[in-house]
Image: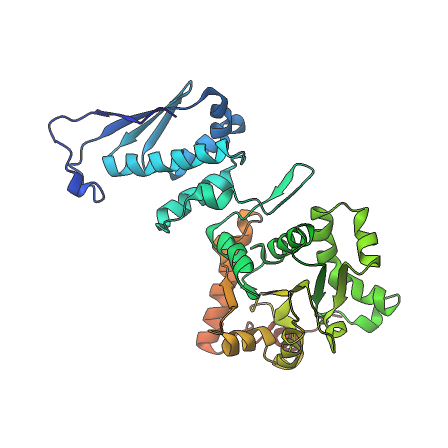
Length: 368
């Protein structure tokens, strides 16, 4: 970038009043701001087929025009200043080696619009772990706060809907902790709750019956580690993937322990799990309280833990929302739509969405 943007006032009849810069009116003068972008950064800023530029045109409050390596912003002073800051953050991300995508652009604009005080460049360029050219980073401000909480606290609860990176980021932190020798082993566990299927009717041994419940954890491991090394580490006990029932009666020292799908634990199971904590260990519990599969409408152990443990020192609750969904953009819309429907059902105390998912299934029509 140049040493600073140059402003060209378009309407000299109405001098700029700095006291109203943040509250523009129809009488505010329109200004131009020209920004010189380093030639090697132009393609990264605009994106393939100008996809990032089109996203900026949609989101920036000021008009944006690009000619060569010169970017011109046009609008009232407050809008131009806000747009300049977005460009500064995006160019900072490029300098730090973070590829720009439309999602990165949207998240950067969202963070600056919310006025959180956090720099998008600092949030979106935080590297957790890299393997074969792929780097895992938080993609939203709440994800960054979640990752920071894992560093600072012994027990962290990651609560949020599907696609918010709760488990994936926890797995990345676990692998990073193992590689840096902060812990000597990783323990990954989930409750084997029958989500509409019957374990007894699945083919194979008990281990083979349980394996589908643990498959998402294996998949995440293969994204973050050399696949050839995983069986060796599991055989040596350095990595353990097991159902929650296997945790009973143990004390887990010097370990990074992740309990996934914790909304499907009972209160007794959650208490049992949390009290496995040993010296030098860290626990991350993840779950979505809107997807409870416990039979009989039983209260989720995750809900109970959030009520009982809130406010205890060194236990942190990170809450992610649909704004933190990093899957297809429709996932966030789907999450919001179901949330509105379930809230409406709770208010009216009627309708097909009452209770947890297991209760709704039990009360609905059974297929042949």
